[in-house]
Image (cartoon, rainbow, N blue to C red; front, side):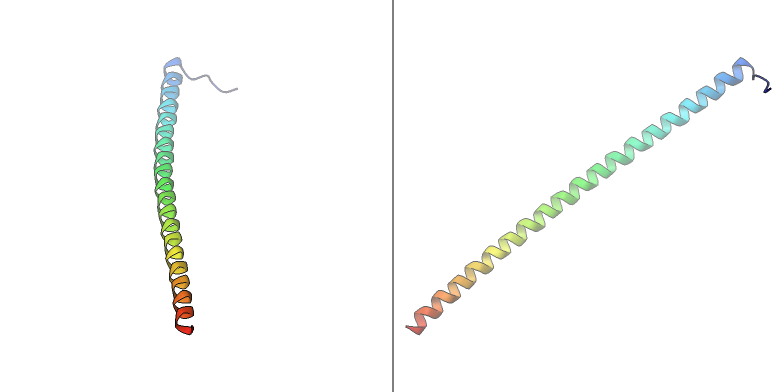
Length: 76
């Protein structure tokens, strides 16, 4: 049988466990908030890249249609 530690020791151990758990929770919430912020930034960057690509594609299509219409005029 284990000897039961005195009440004071038990209280100290409980306090230490609570403090460690609280630190762990703080770290965990800090890390998750950092990850959320980072992923938000990545999403914004991705959206911006896609928007630029779409604009680029629109410009290319406009250039192609202008080229083909100018070629037709020259051929006539």
